[in-house]
Image 1 (spheres, rainbow, N blue to C red):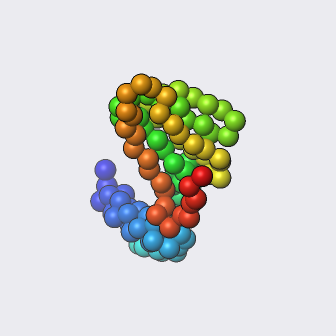
Image 2: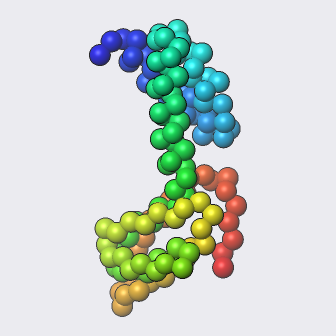
Length: 122
């Protein structure tokens, strides 16, 4: 792998960091810096794919991973029972809920894509 392409990794990290902090601006940082190492067309193609991957990741709002026990997840009108090892992902804006569906206590991990997002407990 050439050094020019390896130089794109820290540039991509910097662009993602700026996007994570501000919510925009990854291309404003990454593309001008990347063109010092690779042709513009190559840089655009690489960073469009990276931005697409980030957009898909952010479009999936709240992953829930069941660590122990059994839970029932409600996403919209759909209800799914999950045991330890199960994972569900809530699309952005979907009404959702979770409850213990077993006899024993359940343990889950909730993850949100942004700490700045407001939410209400129902």
